[in-house]
Image (cartoon, rainbow, N blue to C red):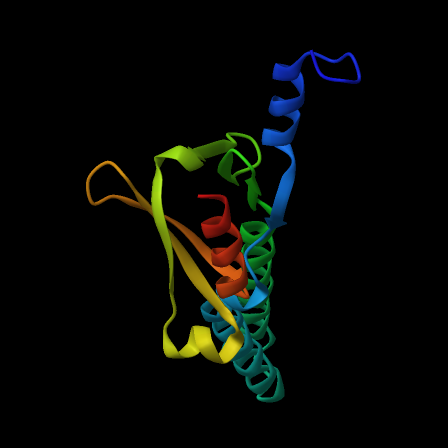
Length: 154
């Protein structure tokens, strides 16, 4: 029993579930989709100006499709770090959640390419104690800050 009369195991489980960080992939994670959508929009404008509305409508549909895909992917991906685990959820109907307990994580590191650094995003790799496996958290804004938060909990 704690001083306030609550069982001690209840308090620790509440502490384990307390949220340290919560986020989604950054918009710039879907840069390729934005690029293809803008190229399609440019093509649609050029084709509409040459009096071929049928082809222009096809490109306009493509713009909507690529933007919709970027919105869908971002909305259905969520990350959370608690004092006990790192959670990665994806999907709407068949939602899958991957939970990696902190006790199974050996270390965390940040992986960034040149475009990632330009846009301030990166992938956090959770290196697991068992073997050479790692779990990625992709498209994280300010990945160094989030990585330090995870490492502080290890």
